Image 1: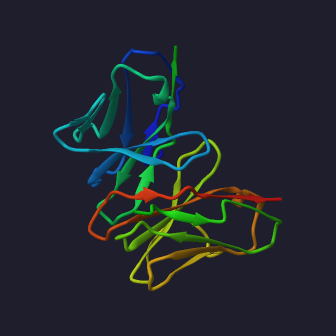
Image 2: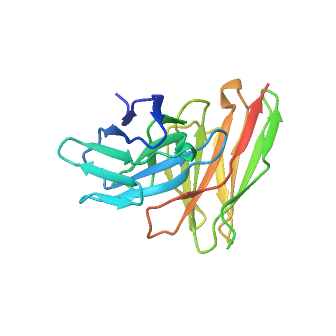
Length: 110
Length: 112
């Protein structure tokens, strides 16, 4: 079983719609959680950290469920520019080593 | 404020050769991590450096080695290249006390 698992997609989303997807992690000792965005042939860019109480950044909302060991990302009012691969990232308590999921591809269409 | 920089951008090598990739961290960051990203997959952790020492290592063979310099910049060396080493190599920097890592644009290595 992979340490961090994501649905690879693609999620085809009409412009203006809402899309949500999850990721699950296997290490219950994980302490920090992030969503990164990666455009084709570019480096991952930090989208947002995920806090225990959930957090929102504009149109993006992240949730953490420690009991079930999953993280979610919701995108409201999708824009064409939101088309990208979204990487779920976990930082274990053993150190500052990031473990990435395989990514969820989102395609926003007019 | 310069972000993370990496060189070269692209590199083509043949099997059995050796390669050195370079990374300069973001200003104010002292910790550098290296990742390998194969096509269609998420990045995989190779190792992490701070205070000029390797502090953590992922599941990569000894052919992968690194170095950190006093100015916090870092090198990744790969010996005896295999076709399977073809990938995007990403460098990420962070402050020691922070968990958020910021990535450079990567070096795309092709082994033929």
